[in-house]
Image (cartoon, rainbow, N blue to C red; front, side, top):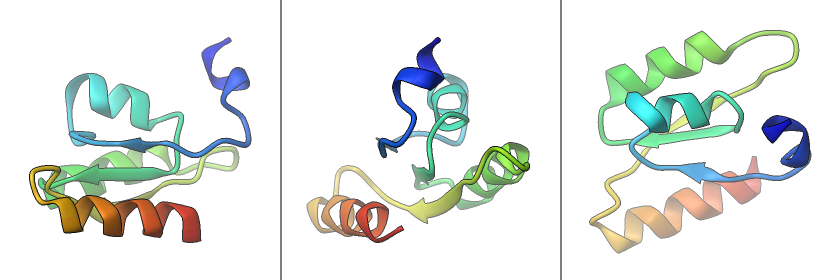
Length: 76
């Protein structure tokens, strides 16, 4: 399945607070979005013994924030 092929890998999902981004974020670790409240809700919905997620506020139109988000994901 989709999730098993990605096991051990890290991806940054932008616009992860809703829709397709939210669905994809449930497979990954870093939830990135400018909508902090919704992003944190997605992280909370992922929490469980086999799923770990963390939120990082990121506006993809700001290059510095994207670079910081990538560094954050690598660190985590």
